[in-house]
Length: 190
Image 1 (cartoon, rainbow, N blue to C red):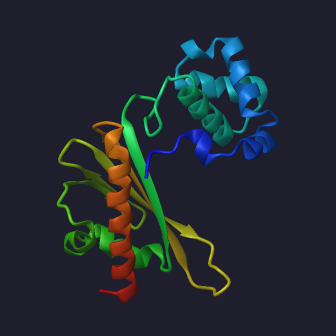
Image 2 (cartoon, helix red, strand yellow; image 1 turned 90 degrees about the vertical axis):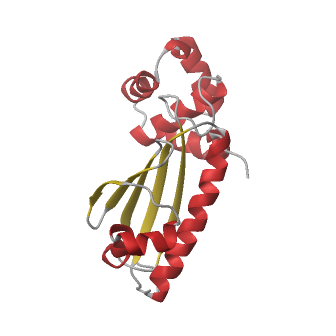
């Protein structure tokens, strides 16, 4: 599975419905304003300030523009680093999942690597440092219960400062496998 660009992740119809302009219209407007010479933050601020684009959509248009104009590659942050993100929703509460993040022995059962803990905020987030200097944030966020009334929590992993574009797809696969093991551990209560 390759890295999907912003245009593949957010359809043009959805973008136009949310922002009032098509992707092509935004890109032309940005080109005419001289945005090829601007940094990421300036483009997003301009979209919000000059055109009243919601912050989330301003980020989406900005990333798409930067990728379309060759200013950044898919999976690359505005600072030039590469990053990978993966999420998984579990039928549990953050408090039920937290021990599998916060306790080293339980974490090693599903994570399969022994990276140094940089910080933790119980029961919401965990930060790790990879052997290669990369950084990992694991966030827990409650999700409204489904029709069955069962509690749900979203586990979001953001792995930043990856060594290059070729590491993004492999890193996503690594985290998908880890979250599968976490889901099994939480589900079994072991």
